[in-house]
Length: 195
Image (cartoon, rainbow, N blue to C red; front, side):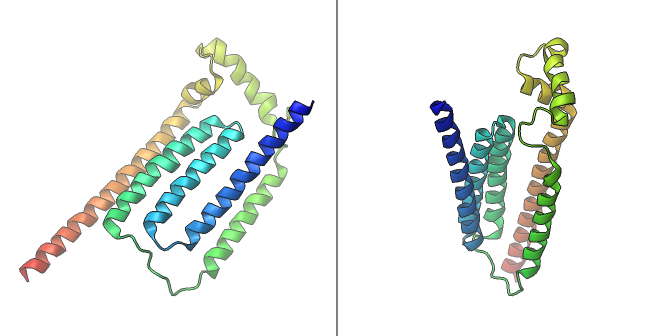
């Protein structure tokens, strides 16, 4: 019994520590003006989020967050910084409107989660209808012993393909934008040299 209490306490302590680190990292990102440091801290934020997902037993989400959030996003932001510059321009406009929008959207999200079933509730609709079919069908229909793999690669394969397509399209779009900006910069450099 004491082992369960100590394990539960440690899990809660690690979760709270991760949330505190996420908050500190987010505040640091808001305060910095060096965009390289901001990109590095957003990568660290993504890695902390991935660790939090692992603690919450969402390993598949943690894998996606680590690869897309910390990996691909960081590389794309660094590529963008190589073209645009390393310092943030100080804005003279008020930050009150974005703050209000963030508070309203955050409030709406919190309101939307009020009707959700409790975490791990065995009587939740997903545990009564969907999960038993996946658990039973994973072994019989697909012959894959890992249920998460069978769900992502078979039952939700079109969804996984769509997510991959979205990431690929976003990457191609960023590369095209960066390429056109480099061409414009090269054209203005040539024009400036001849004048």
